[in-house]
Image (tube, rainbow, N blue to C red):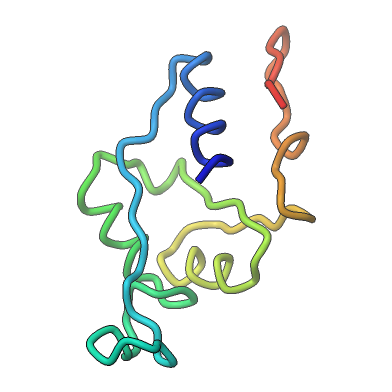
Length: 105
């Protein structure tokens, strides 16, 4: 979770925030019986993204998803959002800065 905490801090310096963090509890090969099943909320299925789009006032036409895993990009596209891949595990340097703006890394 340290990476997530760092991201929250970086966004706060720009006046932005993350409204929620969620994760899928189910996995088809899970070790705990009650969590061992397929789920629409597990990527590459779009369920979690669709839930967020319905839960928060998001303009899907102005939204996109960025990640390094093909399954995340598939989930975004299945939810009707563009998906963009960045190489590696860190997104620092991926997002272009607006003129006169510095993005923390």
